Image (cartoon, rainbow, N blue to C red):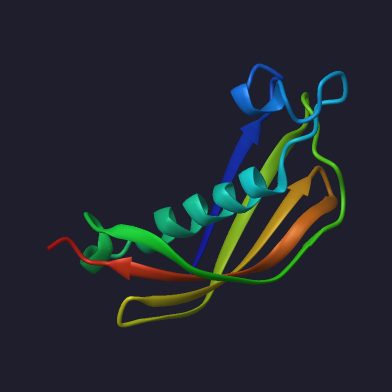
Length: 114
């Protein structure tokens, strides 16, 4: 199971104003959160999680390989390695063009709607 999302960073994002003044760089936490959102959309494509909630359970082996800046279009890829009984292990990558910007593994809990 796989999901892919894209975002073009314009430079108008609120978090870029302080990270860093005069030299804006997309924070790693934003890249990881974007990957988590792609993973959640992927899980919510399954009927049992459609109206549920995705929660972080852990972040493993995450490495940042390239700076992402305003004007860059990032592609966020999420591939489920394991998705059973509400637990997911999802391999994630961020690419800008063909360049790897970040990669890692997200552990998630996908809760069905109560």
